[in-house]
Image (cartoon, rainbow, N blue to C red; front, side, top):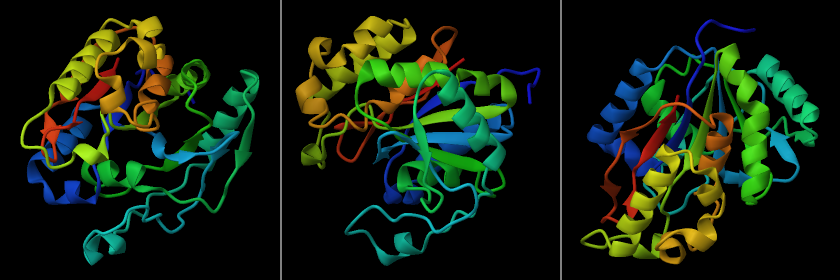
Length: 257
């Protein structure tokens, strides 16, 4: 399965269904995809699926999960019939087992919006096989090790994507300006990620400015730790930056490698 080109690893700010009404963000995601090597398959670790042990989702097209509330009806009719990736699922099981990480199959579990909303913009033809796997916990060391275990997929044509938000405080939606706590945390995250300061990244709850306000809960942040574990060195860029929904939700997305 090896290829001559190592795939990068991504962390995406995945937005919500209204991202699909934002032509600027759609264009940024589409341009990002065009600049990447064409993946053989995509493995997504989304903030919206926490299950222990690591759970491996459907390997054939199944209905999407509309895990959001209060949006216009059109968003509950979205479709993204990407092919399944049974061979990649088998490889994920093998890699996790080799690292001593337990896994189970959840063959009826479809893609959630943390996976399909950005992918609809990046690969709108839905012609790249997609596999979603769960976050087994919010423990930084465990998630970094999970990323390390999955890293060989990069040399096999598989694009690994962590999907969440670096800041995620729903109580702050609609603010007229970006609060200092959000900009401070966003800047801190960009700095430690760019420098591969894994110690600081894994200790974010204790050391990051504005962390309590930026992350009342942690599930949207921790996918970036999986991504960092899969690409612990090399070039880091931020293809998408800026703020959304009033200025408290950073759109900062990361390309490792």
